[in-house]
Length: 205
Image (tube, rainbow, N blue to C red; front, side, top):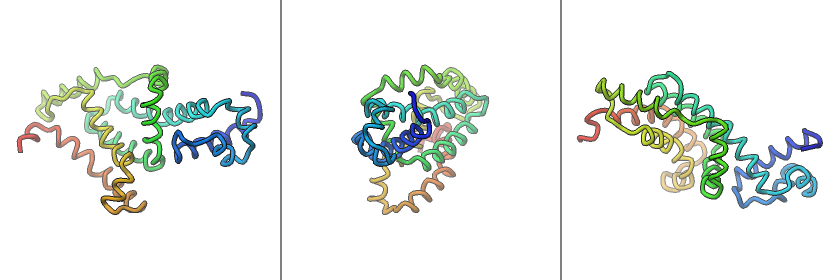
């Protein structure tokens, strides 16, 4: 796109704030007001709200997904992977608490965008993860679990508090500070909870 890159960056930053806070119902007018520009200038850079929404999605996805794939595909042990992903994922979501709802919308209404994005950045090496799990099973430190279940369970435990944040505020009486403290505690407790649940005999009580 032609034009002043400073203006384009201002538009993009404004769109990111608006979309993450208001979700897909946000209007181009909202973005224009946030960026301090006219709506006609906004349309000069991004012809439609959908095109701008997609650009923000790709940018936000690129900030997290490749990093987590890198951790999963690394030579770290299973325990190190769990600890690193939990700490990294929760820290990122603390700084971007509206991102899960934003991504969930895209997954529901535009799954092709994520599929296209994943083709460009690669996918987790589930075969390598499966081999690591099998080694732990052979050592007697872990119950058998498909790598897909392992991965989905881990990520779900990380993202759920942010998706359910309004419910947690209502049910547990959290304010923003209490929620932040809850997430800090979760960084410490979640890895051991997750790994202990996979130990042999963990389901026998």
